[in-house]
Length: 119
Image (cartoon, rainbow, N blue to C red; front, side, top):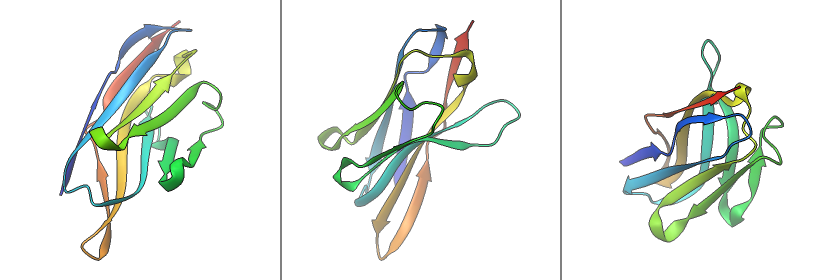
């Protein structure tokens, strides 16, 4: 079992920056991907950024060049550096971990952290 806790959300003015953190605890096992998803009010949860083995990264088109995903394996922590924030980035951001453990692939979610960007 893996427990994910996000932190770092808050209220920021347009053009500002925030860094989200996702701390994993428990039996992390072999990580396949760590990702950040977001869900705006009335919208669906969508992939924002993802990092895989070998530090291969994927970004949503809307955040490419502004957001950077990274991870510190020793600290079991993933980060999302968000720069040049826009009001449309306002959403609840969720950390997601996909692992291979016990002969199966498991998916875990954090509880989410609110990011509000004011214009």
